[in-house]
Length: 437
Image (cartoon, rainbow, N blue to C red; front, side, top):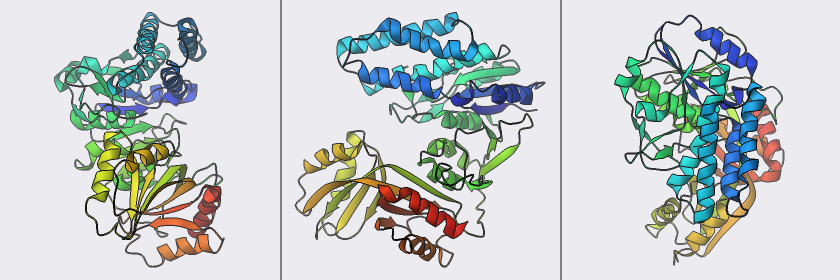
């Protein structure tokens, strides 16, 4: 068995079946097995909330340490290890310092949040005695200085190749900048970390040991027991990753696509490595074309309207630059000759409105943010070549009296977008799903 890279989700750390099956799957391997670990979701949320509240209330160090230690105790039924306690102390010290300073940079924020992965790995190590912990610092895993959205650049392959056969646990999501500052590649981006290591080490397949939310044909909170999608292209998987009912980082495919390295999502229910979903370059078009009906209500719509919008050059560029400089991510842009529509997260809508108002466009007569909306994504390669797909989508919503606020298709062969009122999100998903499945 050759060397392997496996991503193990933080939500599985307390799942005895998932962990025991992974141990059994790797048992007897005479190779190096790198298990890249994401943060335990609750632990990451605790650190994020503590960072947000440190300016509002005086930090209660003892209480926070107790909460952090609680994750270790509940999961392992043991007192925290020395390594875990040391990390917890460093984290609380950082938060205390930020509270005293009264501010923090993006770099410092990434440093704080990186403890979620570090602490999670120490908890997993306590449950896996045969495994050894190695940190990104140990293998010189370098990233760009785009804090919060860093790009992996290099790793010390000589150090990795010197390791003896065995299991090595690596906290995912972050690396070190050229100034040796931790920079994260995004929230729960261990998939991306694992993909980069897979490519750099020269392994022929990236394995994901289960997903928190499988690649299913729709959100299971809306559609009961939707089928798992067995085959996806890199582009389809990345598109679906932008919807929160899928737990896959959209940048995972970046290091793998040009090298044609496939991704296998393995079931955690057995030790056989049963493949649930394969993601690769092969464009597999299903009979009904559509593979998934995805949705999110974590959006707001920033609208710039005016008869001269299509004639005045530079409007789109100025807005995107302004939002980028402020660290506000644009999910998508849908335009016409008289309107430019930016799809943003719900929390960023009001912030973006203030920033764009400052630009003072003469050709724009109205700037506003539309709230209480939802984005429906209909995903599947072959939409531009297949007759009737768009008609079926619009018939499904029209026949059920669902008003479409905005639509966009044609920019890609694999996705059509609909923006509807938030109250119609679930109904839209059900009706479009029923039209195709």
